Image (cartoon, rainbow, N blue to C red; front, side, top):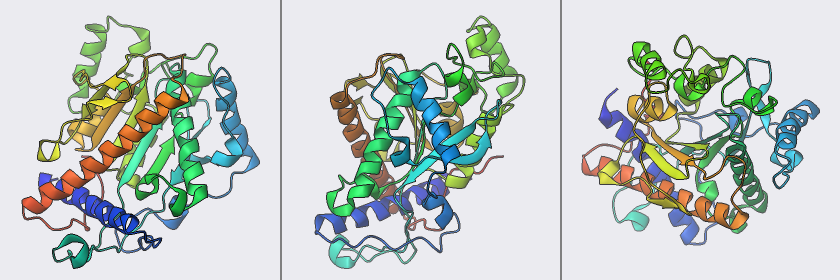
Length: 359
């Protein structure tokens, strides 16, 4: 897939963002029209989760109970629903959507000073993932806290929102529920595989095994698996990236206390230098990691947030600072993507929608 195609996808979403933000700034309560004609737009069923069933609440409550050392969250309010995928031990992987997908908004000439592109624009999509490693309890708790704030804003409506609804969020609090619910919690899944070394990056064989036997010294906590994408949790996220076609992936981890980034840099836009008290310190790429697979191989912006502690959660003030900085950077990233595509003479990119297809 060409770089031009990927830039066009980002441009379509970024121009949607510009139009939506302009409408908000002008005080209009009118939201962009619902999606319908983008070939990669999520369906209505994907956009609006059904009411949580008792079994869904039980699955969410099991996660929350494991995080009892932290401030409790209201599973009924969050209304996570199963994705349809299950872990090795049959536990559901939960998800919640915020911000209905939208298309059909075209900036007017009075808003932009230019003729609006003829193609349909689409809403920027953000995939927020926690708990790839089950023993990083603060990562899961952070995603749950941010999901609470998204739910609060959604309940308040556009007039009371802080702007987060401009994006279409898909939130996955615990990708590795078996690791979280093990006693004690484990980094690896129930098969003993480090999911963040199991993604099918180019040359996974023999690079992943060589890295594990050499650099990792056969640490069982970092075992990459016997084959790429061997684990059901990994395969689900691969499919999810294809289905949802995110513009940005946010992966929350602990305990290195830094930010890492893999992916495009439109118009030389740097990764966020700071989120709250966390600063950028790029670690490089690893065979089988999500950053390598999503950012390097698929061309999607992948921001990895490494909290300072796996068992000690930042306070709400610090989480709020991180949240504000994160959304500001996503907005800037999307706008730069649009500007880069327009400067290159490309269209709005409405026909695009998603990461480079898997090969």
